[in-house]
Image (tube, rainbow, N blue to C red; front, side, top):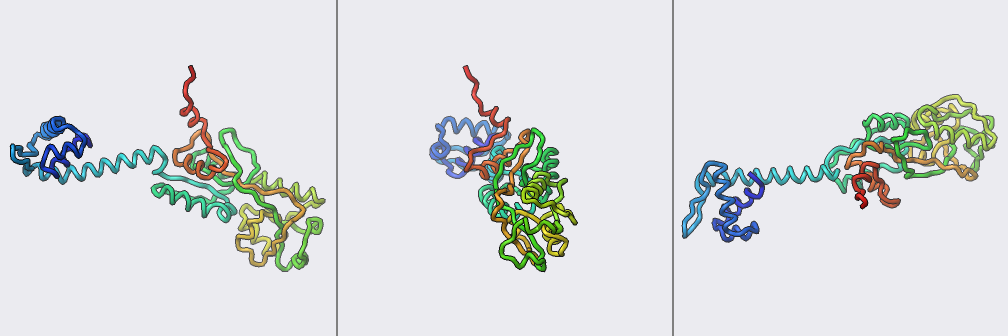
Length: 310
């Protein structure tokens, strides 16, 4: 029993006229009659009483009309969902992100994606940079927003999507906090709080290079694996810190933020994905995010799209 047969039956049942129904379903009248006859044979019941004057539904036909409408609606809905799933428009998208990405990237991006693809469930997971790499390898995440640079296995691809300057964080009661302009040279004898290298080695090394380039050897008193923790340690007077400028979007009570105008190094956030396993839904997300710089395609997708040469 095909959707075409169901549509034909419903058309005849509603019109009670084979000629008018044939036009509605774009069939010849003989072809429509054959479809109805075949449907009756499959069901083993008579659905219509036909005469030269009129066509009527039998009691069985009246029952089947209600069932056919419901069955056709379910079939069409299932077909739509299957096609959406094949296109990535139905399913789940698992996004890993660091806290600063949540402040500067995630809100408008996720809203835009959900507006475009309302049938996709978006799971947002706050995951540290190196843990994101592991979860992408283990296929526990579809994409991730993390700090770069960092070493990655060959199957992990990345594209930088955000850049920002570094700033200096000072406890509000620190003597340097009263100065409008602070340089790193002023911080040679200060205690530092730094982001742990284990969770973001490239980010950590960038900050150390900035310090060394300015003649500063940080005296590290505490390490933090989260930006929120870093801010809290500075606020508690444990030391000063160098951090991305978007840190100012977080709660910075008891913390003074000073720019580093002579510092050209920028902190970067990239989107990462496992090129060996990119779902259709993840591909939609990557295309939407990176549309300005061109489509991002996996090796498998490229191979499917390649045409054989003669």
